[in-house]
Image 1 (cartoon, rainbow, N blue to C red):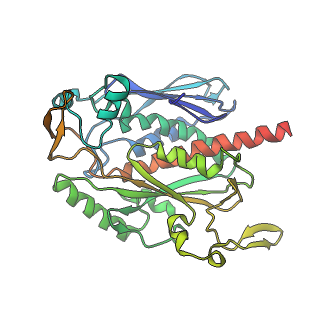
Image 2: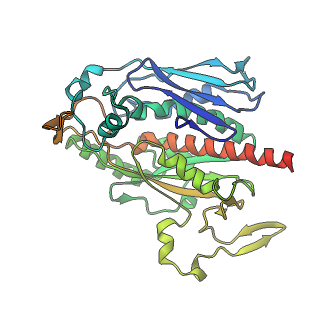
Image 3: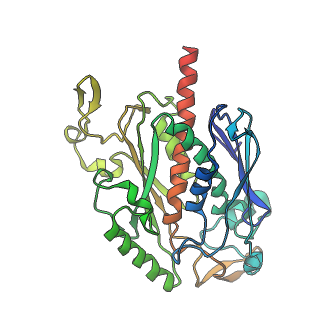
Length: 360
């Protein structure tokens, strides 16, 4: 079950970085959904490698194929199988670490847990797997768009360079206007220059992707142990290289007093809303109708183009030499992944709410 995510809208992930391909099986998608293939491909294009000099230069078209669950462009209600073939593997780039554990990778833990590991690009632990998640997330987005619910994300920080604006001050339509995927042009250029500098130094750098979910109805969430923000947190922390998650006021909220932090409830012409949104659109684990917003922290990419000390499988000291094609900073390509995972959660919880209404 560790490869399956969701309650009703369920996604099962399969494939390896240097295998024949990666993909997903989406079960629980309502029948009759118009699956716009051009939109799904556009989402995959946002995640694919080789987009600019600040991303990995692996050349994958990331074109996808439906193998089941679709007829005449619409979902049938049966499981939808999506395959994305790998086309630009260079497995020989990893021969040098066949018996050596790379620092801060999953090499050692996978070896200890399973007794073997696919050293070619990390195998199952590779971020290559997220291509399938993005395809599934695109289906979820199509379903949610019909309900007026939108999942967006953008880069808000690279290293110590932080975007000094709230998402409400930004035009998120500008997110795709630059290679960094920061909607503020001036900050985006500074971030690009920082990432490029780090790349030239043969190093890597981390960052933060911020997410915004708008058009959310009241009542999504299943307390106690399936709260909406907990599910979003699980989804985000399942993404490769993620080291932190916060929603609403997050850690900044500890600096405030209750009198400052409380979101006052108002009746605005018959619509119940809050004057502020420190709660991040979720209270008691249930959506309250306000925007859900959150931050996801990504560590620096573990593979660096420098020699590092480590050990081999026999426990002897060894040197790991960085080779291959890798992102100097993962956050630009992580934006569509964050959107996809948030869409999967929201689609699942929307269907859960509909099911509960029918039972009621």
